[in-house]
Length: 256
Image: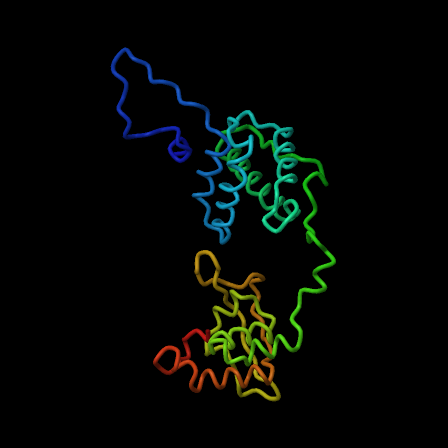
């Protein structure tokens, strides 16, 4: 099964004629193994990692190297190569991006050890060699916020579709992640509490697979409903939802 998954055995291939020897196959490369490995994975960010394999790994020298010949020096060279790659946002790749790409290669080699394709993983870099995960421009994080005027516009500007204003209201006034907001249903809104109602946040929708799952922390939490958000939700429930979808909302319907 391992040989088949790795592309090393074709059960439908024509057997060689008697007296002939089958032509030996080329050794499995790092790229071939990594591509085969990612297809077997089921974690939520497999699509992101598949893109990293195709956009970065397949362009590197490491990709064409036979899997069994990889050594720590080759992994180190791969990380150095990543450090010099241009970023679409200007400059070179951020430390977080490099770590994410390296992580894919490291886990692929770990699977090769388990499958007995290699005796040991070459991803044994000394501490500090791979860049520390920090913001590319740490000072800019302090500016990553909406002004009061921008928030008011996002919640009330009639040029925005109503369902968008509702979505922005829940995001801005609860601090929930986008996947958590996408999974909110009307039944989790307790509007009868005083002085503030609450939303029970316990599910999330994964952005790549669109599958509903638990939250990132796997811990349900209760979020107070700001008075402005309460008015937005009341209006959306009373008439906006029906205008958008042609029917009254049910307890099991998604809010947005």
